[in-house]
Length: 482
Image (cartoon, rainbow, N blue to C red):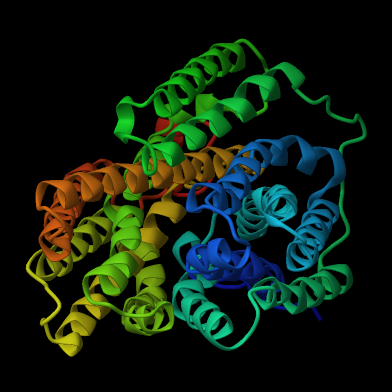
């Protein structure tokens, strides 16, 4: 007897199963990122190297990740989702084990690059497979599956990382990934459906890759240097940024001339993809930049240890985790626009108390504002990710995954660099008064969030019937939004 089809506003159990299988493996990537972010000072000390050198443990990973992302569209068509997922997870596993066995800082950076290659493929493949399985239905609820690792990471990552650095060798940071990778591989091998690939093997757009991948890497490199060099005017920043912009422009011109480009930038003509990508880029200023400020504020202005700072930031992760189910349902019923506007407004309002905070400010009061800020983060992340896939067919989904992931990554690097420069400048202006310098930097974060609140009005609103959508998007079969 055939099982009844799920209601249109419910997530198909098959989608939930696929999502959970993939999420198990992807948790390794999220934990790795959040754990390593709190360990750079310890790594510099124990590997007897300068902070400027140890920064490449993160920068090398990000560069490799950025260059791998565009390959996912071609690789999915060439080998299929299951094979590509297992390959990427295996690469990340090998990179993790290699990082744990690194004999010096150079070998650690090299193994982190291997990790970055695997991690760069994993996120777009995760998003693509889940969204294709969903078939355009209940996108808000579906994204709550994709967002789950990202919500758990900020809660558990700093805690696990701080505990390892306090009581164990730094090498154990990378062994945390291993069980998730192994279990993820076993589950994928047993339960993901067999791949169906095209009879004619697709050709890799080599010239497009030679433009796009180095372009993304150059932008990320320049933005990473902006936080450590003399602001945005330093040659180490200007030259990579100029090269990155030139390569990206060249890729766009190249892609518009091809019928099957590496990344289909024509999707930017669709309002859902364009508005989602713009918000994901700008969320780097309003969301990710503040995520740089908060742990630094607790450690430098309030004298907390890395473990204590991780514990103090837990309320933010809890807030985002608590709101995810409600936000997913509301995204499917009332649309992304109103939820995202409210989310950014909450983020802005709950950041304002940090503009006045100092070492004497009550920790419980700050924890309350972090909980509220986490609720705002959850209300922003899920609808922005979901709206990008409105009205897309199965072949367009991998391209949307690459475009939105790239916008999010570059925006995150840009926002982090901007606020790092603002913070360093204000530390100098306030003659070492750390609290005052952080207060000014938090005001900038509030301003970015306020601007993002206005930008969110561009997002599609309440879902409408497919008949109305078809007149706007032509090929769209699923409901899009006003």
